Length: 109
Image 1 (tube, rainbow, N blue to C red):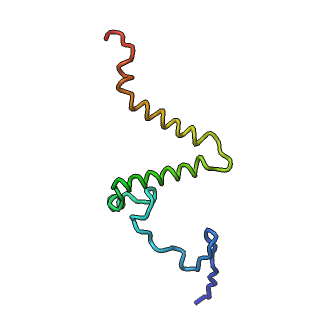
Image 2 (spheres, rainbow, N blue to C red; image 1 turned 90 degrees about the vertical axis):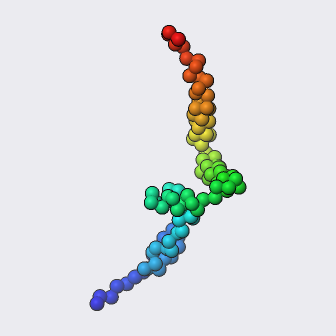
Image 3 (spheres, one colour; image 1 turned 180 degrees about the vertical axis):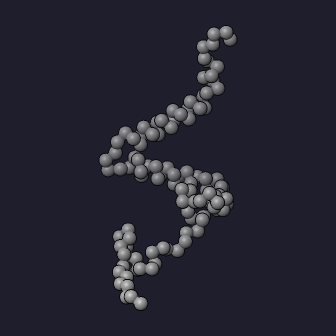
């Protein structure tokens, strides 16, 4: 049997012992939506908190993530603000579409 030298591996700044590359499996309730497989979606949704406090906490986490990624940066640009304004314009248009639809110029109506 050949002798195999297993050296420690550096992964994300941490030393990982050989043979222990995979950490413990993450519970489905703790996974992010992008990491959930389609078959696990029902269990993942069942683990969410749909109470008013849970919804407020989730929207707060989403706002904090958006703010830290696009607004609170060292070299910021117009991208984060432009994305926010584009979303506002799109939502405003959708909300007012029925009113705008009736203001169109029609030839025979």
